[in-house]
Amino acid sequence: MKRVLPGFGLTMGFTVAYLGLVVLIPLVALFIKAAGIGWHEWLEILTSPRVLAAAKLTFGASFCAALLSSVTGLLVAWVLVRYEFPGRRFLDGMVDLPFALPTAVAGITLTAIYAPNGWIGEHLAKHGIQAAYNPLGVFIALTFIGFPFVVRTLQPVMEDLGKEVEEAAATLGAGRWTVFWRVILPMLVPALITGFTLAFARAIGEYGSVVFISGNLPMKTEILPLLIVSQLEQFKYGAAAVIAAGMLIVSFALLFLINLLQRRLDWQHR
Amino acid sequence: MSSTHHVTTESKPVRLLLIAAAAFILGLFLLLPLVAVFAEALRRGWELFLASLKEEEAWSAVKLTLMAAGLSVPLNTLFGLSAAWLVTKFRFRGRAFLLSLIDLPFAVSPVIAGLVWVLLFGAHGWFGPWLAEHDIRIIFALPGIVIATVFVTFPFVARELIPLMESQGSDQEEAAVTLGAGGWRIFRSVTLPSIKWGLMYGVLLCNARAMGEFGAVSVVSGHIRGETNTLPLHIEVLYNEYQFSAAFACATILALLALVTLGIKSLVEHLSGHSSNGRH
Image 1 (cartoon, one colour):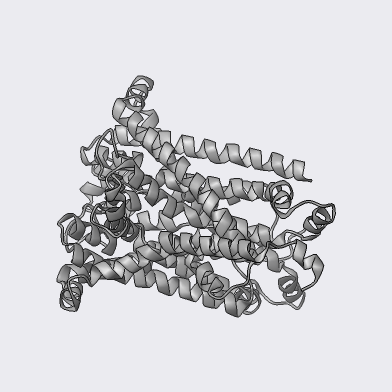
Image 2: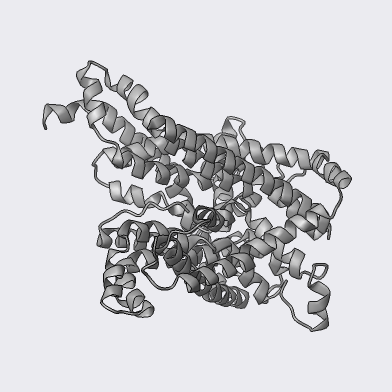
């Protein structure tokens, strides 16, 4: 195709140079630093009990949080797209709050709410449940962070769903629940997976909202990003780089896999 | 209501139940924390609240936060405009790859976004000795805070503009070219007016993130009180010293910033008549 509009060279040059300087070179430097450590020590660092415990908590809590965000996000997106009711626009605007609220603010606030003397923590404590300073607290913070990703990914897809298929299914005698389960939900699955993945990926790296509510006990409530910080504070730059590189490899692999799955689903859908 | 409409919605009780459930989820998950920020800040009264905001360290934190955002947001805005023009006006090899690279910082933990700069410019980093020789401070100083913030907020403006400019196409710009208009002229008088709301929201969101960034900045700042503490870091310091009311008082500034951002988003959507459901 012939390029009609001007500015290709200029924007290409600036975009690539800026991307390289700000994102790519630093990330490559991280991997070079990590690779320089040596294979043997890599294994030693990544299989140490403290790293393994942190990895289990980080990925486990992120996965569960993304799952809960998917279920609640599906319900909220459905209500916001399909129903007309007073206060709908207000609720819709609220969904973005975790995007806009700084993570440190979210962190201290969630801690205040879920601490044993907090608004919700108080009631949980009566039933012997401790949310803050427990893995449960990590899960709560990560759910807060991931929730909007699911809603915002589902909404445009739901808005574009044609009602013809639903009508056809209903004419053929399918009940509303059957229509939802067999007709609507399958059409939403690709978007649901995308939303889940975005929430999951964001949760894995989350730091600010978690460090306050988790209590940061090694082996118990310590997440991977915090472990990186504590390695840095002890001037163990190599170990910090190795843990970070390991996290990035897992995150990128995850996003790549989901991308593949997505294309397959899209293809089947056609 | 026609009968065909009826079969594609739920019965009234189910609808009400679902609406109530959604309102409950949003109230408990999102509204309650927002209310709690202000309730905690005012728990010990207005006087203490105002006094905490007048602290000198709080002010220097606000100033540093404004400076970091004031430097990183324009840079990322320039990048966003350039990248959006590039990928929406032209088709070239590697375009899809470039698009995924722009999204890359979303998948990187803020802590890692800080760590990469420490590895490059820290005392034990690649350029550390050279910087020390020339007496240049990047880590534990303003430049470090700015570059860490730039990394974390890198995709926001681009992400907002790309879908918008893609959906608008290039017909008008191409018409302007045939009429003999130059590149800058086309951008200023054809493209910019039609993307101004999206651009404004992208800049605002980028700004909210820049001012609220915690993890990345925490790694590179060194937590020097009154010097390299941004507002979120100052909140952390106060909180860890059990000065809860003061911590929440400072948090209200950032919570208000978030509310203003969301308010303007709603307004922009209302004015432009389209809903921008970009991912962030």
